[in-house]
Structure formats: C-alpha cells, structure tokens
Length: 75
Image (tube, rainbow, N blue to C red):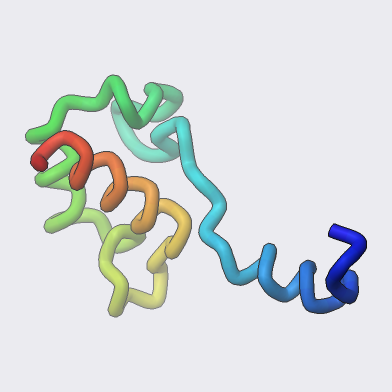
C-alpha cells in the first residue's frame, strides 16, 4: 500500500505466519496438509518437537498451519 511506510508494511508482513501447505516430515513428507489423516495430525501435535511451542526445534509456521487445519476439521 502506498498509504503506509514500506518499513511498517515489512514489519507487519514478517510478523504473519507463513502457511505451510505440504507436510515436511517423516513418512508423509510431501503430502498436502489437507490430505493428512486427522489422527496422524493429532498424534504429531503430541509427539513431534517442531510442533511443540516450548521446544527449541519449534516451527511457528508449521504449528500455526497444523492448528488452523485441525481447527477447521474439528469444529
């Protein structure tokens, strides 16, 4: 937008999660998040370090994407 300073826009853009559309891990690597079985995603949330917000290996973008996917499925 030409109405706001470019620096402010970049900061806002960088603060937004980057949607992950393809599962990057394990036996389901390369599978669309939307095609993963719900039971696998629920298992992954409890067992994969990159999905643990308190882990040093946490991936905020993957955590956000899995949360959005599971919320949509379980509502």
